[in-house]
Amino acid sequence: MGFDVVFFSPYTRGMELSTENQDLIDQFIDAMWLESGLSRNTLSAYRSDIKRLGLYLGRASLLSVGQAEVQKFLATLLAAGNKSSSSARVLSTLRRFYRYQIREGRVADDPCANVLSPKQGRPLPKALSERQVEDLLAAPEVQRPLGLRDRAMLETLYATGLRVSELVQLSLLEVNLDVGAVRIVGKGNKERLVPLGEQAIQWLQQYLESGRPALLKDRRSDSVFVTARGAGMTRQAFWHLIKKYARAQGIEGGLSPHTLRHAFATHLLNHGADLRSVQMLLGHADLSTTQIYTHVARERLQSLHEQHHPRG
Image 1 (cartoon, helix red, strand yellow):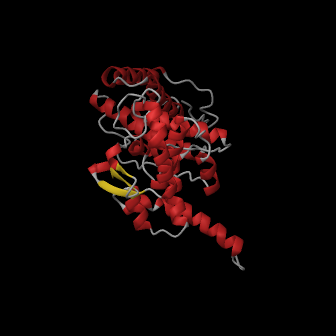
Image 2: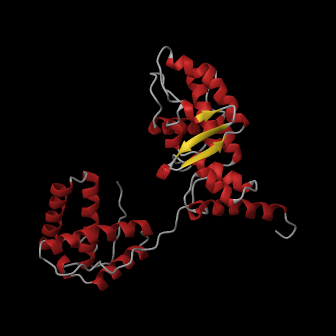
Image 3: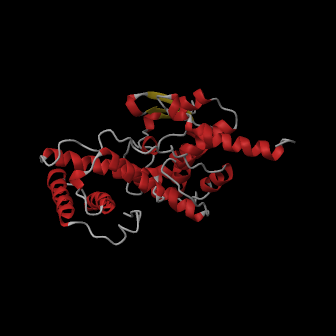
C-alpha cells in the first residue's frame, strides 16, 4: 500500500516525532490490533496517517489538537497535492484515533467531530468503445469448450448489463432462450427480466448444446456457466478471464469487474435509450445511480457535435 509523501514546511522536513507522540501512536496501533484484529496494511496506513499530523504539529502534543488545527492540517494536505480521497481517509483515521483517546480519558473532546470530510468527485465509470467491446468479445477461441463458454459469458454480460455476480450465479432455470431473456434476482431480492439479444442467444445456444456438456462430462450442475472441473464459475475467475482477453486484444486502461456493464449502459444511452429504461435493465433502485452514465454518454455527444456540426 502506497502513501503520499508530504513535506509540510521547512520546519517539519526530516523532523522526528516526539517521544510522547510516538508512544501515543504505538499504544493506539496495539489497541487496534488487539481489539479489532486489523490487517498489517490497515495498521500501517493508520500509523502513517497519524504520523503526518504529528510531523505537522512539530513538538506539540497530539493530545493538544483542536478543531482549527485539524482543519488547517487537512488544508495543508490538499495544498501539497494529496487527493481528496487520501485526505478523507486521513480524517477517518484521526477520528478513530481521538475516539480511542477519549475512551482512555486522555482528551475530553474529539477535535475531528465537526470537521467536514474533503469533497470527493464521483468517479466516472470506465467505458469501452464499441470497437473495443467487439475486439474483447472476439478474443476467446470458440473452437474449444472453455473458449465457447467465455464467449457466451462475454456476450451475455454485454447484452444484458448484468452484474458479474449475477452472471456467474445464473442457473439453467433463469435462462429462457425461447423467450430470449434471463430472470435475475438482484440486490434487495428484487426480480427483473432482461432481454438477451440475438448474438447472446446464438452464443448461449452453442455453448449449452456443445460447450457445457463437454465441460461437465457426466457431472451435474444447475449453473449455466461451469468450469473444467464441473463447478460453477466464480466472480474472481471470470474477472481474471476478462483481464486476460483485454491484454490479448491490446485493450488498456483501468478496467473494473463492471467494465462490460458500464459499456452496456453507455452504449444504450449513446444510441438513444432513455434513462428510465436503462435503470430498469441495470436493476438500479434509484435513478440517481443510473445518472452517472449520462456524463459518459454526454462526452460522446459533445464529440459528435464538434465533429459534425457546422459550428461545432
